[in-house]
Length: 137
Image (tube, rainbow, N blue to C red; front, side):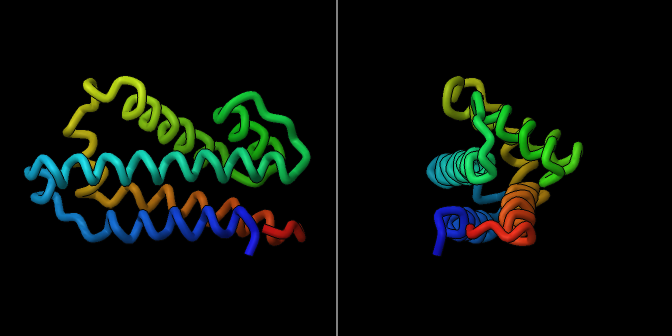
């Protein structure tokens, strides 16, 4: 199994753990921080998939957002996917660098509406698109 598939498997595992959370679980401080960590890790793995996918295509990248731009330029992802990816990167940056400013209502919305599944969808799409192009993932 290639690196991209291993990363995708990890991301899907984190997604399954998030599926086990209920909105009321976030009232427990420990479960809230567990959810936040899973969301952060899931986002980071997506960012790693984008960077690795760009590299696999022979594209140099200057940061995580640039990786998304490069995948868009190669029609691996759509404009809507790129917009979602940028928001995921932004969320992860807040969690990592401005952790005291994380808006708990956003976390609650992500868990309640299972928006984290979009991260899994996007990661899966990238890997599948590369496989369609004959790239070993």
